[in-house]
Image 1: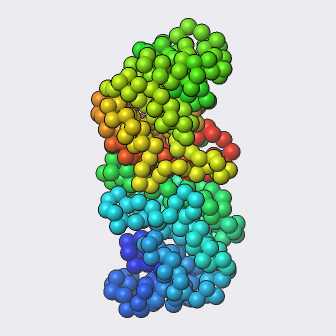
Image 2: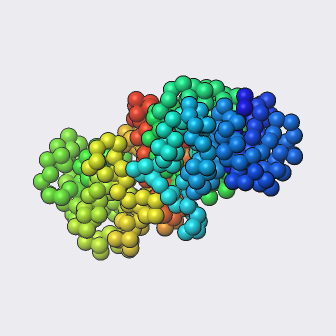
Image 3: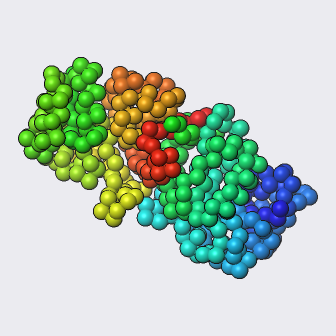
Length: 216
Length: 216
């Protein structure tokens, strides 16, 4: 499959590398076509990996990941031709973290709105699925990094899009019974607002290799 | 031990009943000394149970639980003589839920502040420990209601107070290794902001008998 990965940070690299490993053709998108981080990733990864602008990556992708920093997500997506994303599944992995006031970051949108909803609002023809934003990026693409059972949340307005994301998550190693569908895209408020607890747990546990399991 | 439980709703009743069952002397506090809910609870519970105003319950308690609805917590605590709570451990179980805009509720404080911090700020001589606010009240007092391992979070500025709360939680049935200390009271932002995710899980799972386990 041709997949666009928007973002050249740790999350983008982890996702893009995993996807190439699974045999997908991946273009890493960034603000400029000659981004150094993306160039490094392409040369380290080889066959199946390419780079381009956000618009080029989104245009190429049959499926697109938003792995940009939350603060830049809407700008990045505004640089894309909305027609290129009409009908496309966009997996939004970003969190609305604002580091401008120091650590811990606060959320620049929460409570009555979410980044996932803002992205869906900006791209009404796109099938936005919020997923994977509740954990370290190494755990996202290799759930076995945390031993035992633990969960990944998905939400979005389109059931077929969520089914496609579920399949992709299974290919990442997520057991289907550990993929929890929280409903429509407004549930992104819940998974994004979990971040402050995640950050506290990170501090208390002194490791990013953890996740939560819903026990019932 | 003499314990004051502020609040006559489901949470207050569950906590107060558990405490009486464990042999504590419990006064349920409410706005007025003749609250009907509290009177019903006292007559159903019998020996060890009494009722009074918020001020009377706080005055009696060597330890105090805040189980009022979040919106009423600060008012309830303002009706208490601060001297009566100086040096006292106050376990804050409340969540800052605002139902005025319908379901799901939003949080009336979050992100850069929390109800736990506001209570600690209003009662600087009191040892506020936020705990148990991340689950259904039946699970709070009987963790076996959810089979298997799952976690309860505590945070607060005073280590001895947290140790005392840990002991009390153990008496409720929480294994000591499932009591996660998140640090100082600012971590209440994390556990309170988890509520929107909890509410979505409640909707998705169609039961309140669930909790999360931190897996690492």
